Structures are given as C-alpha cells and as structure tokens.
Image (cartoon, rainbow over all chains, first blue to last red; front, side):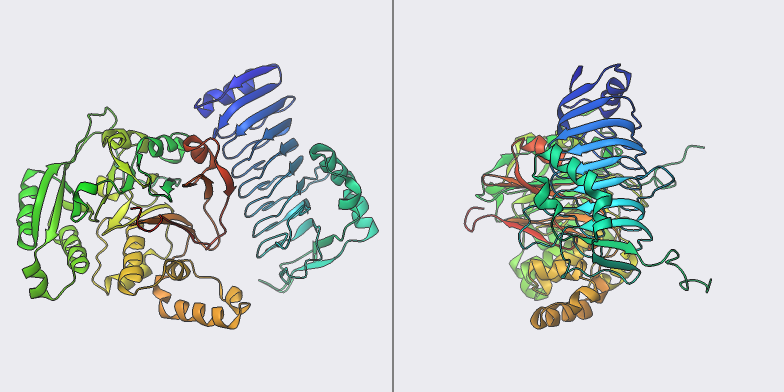
Length: 240
Length: 364
C-alpha cells in the first residue's frame, strides 16, 4: 500500500504517483487535485480529503473510495470500476458514464447522470443516498440512476427539470414524486415488482457500503421514470 | 508570427473565492490569497485580482480611487481632471513588491478624495452619482487612464498574472478587511490586460465572475442608456454597472436585483403564489434588458456584505461553507478547506438562489 501525502502537491505529480504505484494507494490530505485515478484499472485508491474535479474520469476498472466530499464531474465518462463517496458530490456526477458504478452517501449537485449511456454488456449505475439537484438525468441515454432520499424530510428528492431530453435508461426515485414535474417525453409510474428486482442488488450494495438497513429502503414507494418512446425525437424535426 | 493574447481565443475556466466575517472581524489578505492555490489550474496567468472591504479605516470618509496609468504623462492628465471636482487628501503609489511573474506593470496610484461641495451643488448631483460619473469619464474619455476602484473603505487590486502572485505583488498580507473576494482569470473571448482583470468595481460595488455572458451586448446597450460606458473590453464589467443601477439608482433589494439578472423561468413563475408571481413578473418585464444569460457564478462585494449568485441553469460551480463568524464562498470546496479546514455546512446554492451575507450592523 502506497501512502501519498497530497497537501498542495500538483495534480500531475499526484496522479503520476498513483499511476506508477504497483500497489493500492491511500491519498491523505487531498485538496482539490484534479483527475485522480483517471483511466485507472486494477487498483484500489482511498482518498481522505476533497479530491478535485473529474475524479475517476475514464475509470477503467479501479475502485476509488472518498472519505469526504467530491467536487464536480465525478466519474466523467467512466467505463468500469466503482467510485464510492462517503459525502456529497458536486455537479455533473457520472457525466456521460457508460459503465461501472457510483455510490454517493449524501447529495448530488446539478445534472447528475447527464448523458449516461449503455452499450451491450456495459450498464452504468449511479446510486445517490440523499437528494439530487436540478436536471437529473439530462439527456440520459442509458443506464440506471437511483435516488434514495434518506432523511430528507420535506425536501423534494430531486430539483427542477429532471429527465430533460431523456431518451434511454431508467431512473428510480424513492418518492411518490407528487410535487415533481416531469417533461412530456418521459413516463413516470410506481415501480413494479419486476422493476424492483432489477435494482435489488444495487440497493443491497449501497446499504452494505454505508451501513443502512436494506428492508426499510427497499420496501418503500419508488417512482420509475423511463422515456416514453424508442424514438423521442419523432415528429420533432421531421415526421419519421 | 507571434500572436498576442486577444488575437487568439483561449478556452474557458476562472476561479472565484470569498470570505466574510459576520462580526466584522478584520482579516489580512493572506488567507484569501492561499485559497486560490488549489484552484491554480482554473486560471491561466492572464488575470488575477482581489477586493478587500474595511481596509482603509483611517480614510473611511473618502473615496479611494485606484488608478492605472499607461505612463506618467497620463497621470498628470488625470490629476488635473480630479482636481476640478475633488479635494485630494492623499495621493500615493499603491505599494507593490517586485515579483518575477508580474511584469509590464503600469503606473499604479491611489487617491483618497472627497467631491467638492461647490461642484456638487452646481451640478445638482449627490455625492455617489458625481463619483460614479467621474469614474465613467476617466475610463471612457481620458486616454491611458483607468480607475478600477472607487469606493469608501474598500479597494480592488488586480493585475495580469496568477492570483496568488497578484496578492503577493500588492502586499495584501499587510491589509486587514472584514471581507475579501478573489478572482483567477482564464479569459475566454477578450484580451487579458490589467484593466480587464477582475474585480470590476464602481463605488463600493465589486464583482468577481466565473463564466461568460451570452447576453452581453443586449445588457450593454440597455445599461449604456443610463450613462454607463463599457470600456474595459470584457463582459463582466457590465454586471457591475447593472448592480449599481438596480441597487443604488432603482433602490431594489439584493434579492430583487438577483431575480432580475438570474430571473426564474416563466414556467417556474407560473407555479408561484399570486403575490410572488406578480412581483417576479413585474421585475422580469420591467428589466427584461438586464436578464443575464449564459453561464455565471458571481460574488458581489458591497459595503457591509457579500452576495453570491449562480445563473439560473447553474452552469458554473459554487460552494458555500461556514465556521463561527465566517462565511466562505468559492468555485471549489478545496478552496474553502484551504481557508478553513474545519468549515461546516458545506452546500451548493441552487441556480438563481442568491446567498446574501451581511456584517452585523455597526460592526463595519
């Protein structure tokens, strides 16, 4: 295990140390260094502190765990692996991810899961423990976004304009979503038994990581949102 | 051929940061300078700057005019202009340190001034209006002179360079203020030059901005109808004048001014309660030319407080945290943690949500 004291270390040097280590890494006192674990595979990275933007960008199978909050664009375009954040994440988490998993204990900022996509065996999953900001799943094209909304009281589980431009994938919100306005091209309904079977494993994993009881969460009312049509742009530009 | 900055386009970035003590406790500029270090890569060395409030208590009755002059002869032109309208109680070079990364330094002066009563009564203007008009005159009519700070008991300090170097260059560790804002620049469509660095200040209002104003020209044309002149070759300047217009001239509250520049969508207004709906409809219709579109996160500094605001779509990042009497605002949490490792209640305000922090009355 390689221990790196980040302090005000330049992000290039920090990332070089992580990349060249044959072993797992622990980064202490992390303070805004960008691109940590970018494109990384076959390693575990533990981060104490606040990693900078684009944590785990293009991640290729490595496991990253953050003891603290993460900033913007966590898992940007990640392809595989796992990112666990034991705090909250900034804007655009899971931006265009197409594989792997992101588990966030706290809240996500704006545009979480923007342009997530899936391809063949690649199915990205993002689970957010608290609330998600506005434009959740904007242009979502594939994959699964789950928002659990633990201890959020009267707050809405998601901000304004969720699913804008969504045309693929699935979103699960642990709420009846009565106060949430969805756009016309998506369909929101109560999750069925089959819907829940699909995400039971992810919920279990989330609860195991962060130490929650699974039953109470799993047996709640979930709303499922999917795009209405396989061709959401039908009639938008041309009649096809 | 070597292209100069301004002839080539360099894509975007920028960093902002701020701290304020609600108790009015004064802090040196050291901490705010440090906050820019983890955000170094958001800037590209083409502009950095700071604004400090409460830094000139011994001259609190006087407007502190900070000036750039292209050369010494410009200085004479400007001083002759100032003498016609102001009593100058002190004039001096702004203290700077030689810094290897800060070069091509213009003549940098400050003047503590008071408008002449006889001139005010002859022109039938109040003090602030006269000062604002004088600043606009200097910047638009006197060649090679730029007044980049003109408030009481506050000052903007800016240069071409990385912000952490600019702070050292201006000896900000030797000033003490109850609030500070900072900016690291990564110019997008406009040249990186001394006058174009942030903050942009008029009277006690100052703006640091991360983003790019899509509506710039619409905003500029509107605000120039009221005597403002956008002369500093960059978009952010117009926000400063908009805030001065809305707050000082129109008497809007901070929250109302925020709802003008980052107005809620009509669809959001539609769902509001009747009274709120009426008010926001009125503001949007009355000041439609001042809606600022495109990505922005800004921090407005003013006497006794700060306001942070994101564009309504929240296309730029901004985080707020606090600890004891202090509130911290920055583009990245890392910057807040640099100033206060134990900062609490870290949260990201929503798009269009104004975060207003004021110093306790009587403490500044």
